[in-house]
Image 1 (cartoon, rainbow, N blue to C red):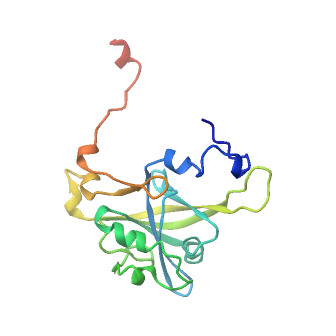
Image 2 (tube, one colour; image 1 turned 180 degrees about the horizontal axis):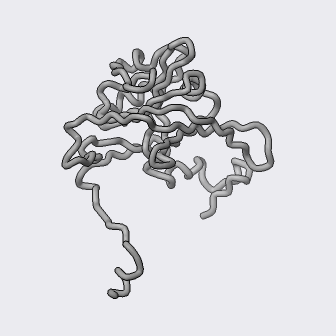
Image 3 (cartoon, rainbow, N blue to C red; image 1 turned 90 degrees about the horizontal axis):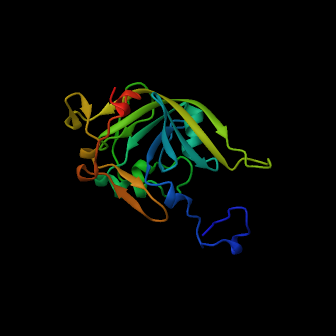
Length: 209
């Protein structure tokens, strides 16, 4: 089967674009940001990831509040979405009017950040405080106006609940983060799905020399 994204929709092999089901599971950036007037926004983004040791990025389809507030305040926070917070995370995706707080709508408490103005989700076990670096319009092939935007931030401080730190390392699985799949699917990371692999140090490991 070949799904041609350049073919007319009625000529494609599947009724729904399979990209999100293939590029999965994806981490969720639960983005909180504050407008220049001090209004709060909270929204989950599954087009999100670390892009360097101290940078993260999320992609917005259209100029939504998380993106515009991050630009206006030049800061944002990424709280970790977990199994215990799955309903609050989902509720915070509701399309509310600009300036109406998703924290209040989803009945989520805020906690102050250390270095930026936007708060984190208080119940989340980890959060990345970021300063906005730039927004990159993702211009499609052939030109035209961008409909998608990549928002890049530099992480300046990290909050971690100490109960999830063992021997100086964060136990990701113990926090039970949730990840996004395609369609309505989510995945849950747990200790029984974890495995480790060591990166090879060089050719000598393979030749035995």
